[in-house]
Image (cartoon, rainbow, N blue to C red; front, side, top):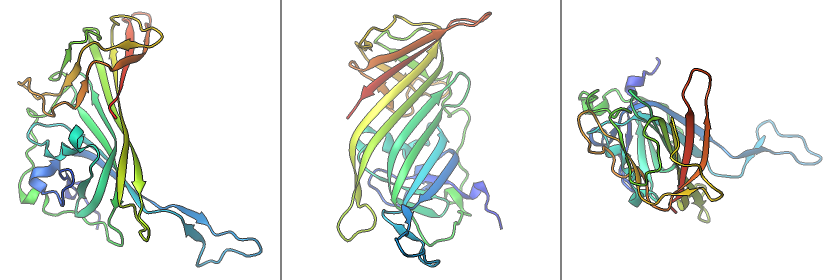
Length: 280
């Protein structure tokens, strides 16, 4: 019998925590993908043929890559605890259906903001302790049997979000904003252990790409330094309070490093500016 998407709720636990409760850590996911990867190579030896029952050697741990696409909604943000700066070097436990993935470390986060469209957030994780030898099973009683409190009035949209540009770096009219964060991590192995025990955080970099109809100024050799804070506030309908605090925040010192602009016949000038910062 096939498994339906309604049986696969996604729950992301608090940083360093155990199994996430479904009602508190539920994430309004639109798509989730899991990929298991082995580190293998053919066993080729001079003067010998490859044995049919022993064809591969394995020189690394099994890893599971998890990709989550979701919406952002007020009242359903407990599952985004991993986004806080204080938790960036920690792991979370992710539950997909009835499957539990332990020691999941975030590797990439991206946010896309467009006018009159729900804000979409994507995150990628690597699990150091995924379930093995089990059948894929759904959860026939998602959200502990209750109704998932999805509400269109609580979802964050592009037209309900707003920009706090104290740096006065952006033009007044933005048509698209894309944010990305990349974590650089190194797995740590112990003698006698097949899987990595933990992952060290080596660096965190963020990038903000803004499409608009103009540029305040053209950059020079070293780009353009932000003299003040630039913040994108993700808010629901009828409120100016951000749903996730300090997610997209570029303080003084971040730089505009690339700019481009062009125009087609019968259209307005279209510009692109990319701001980057190194947080660690």
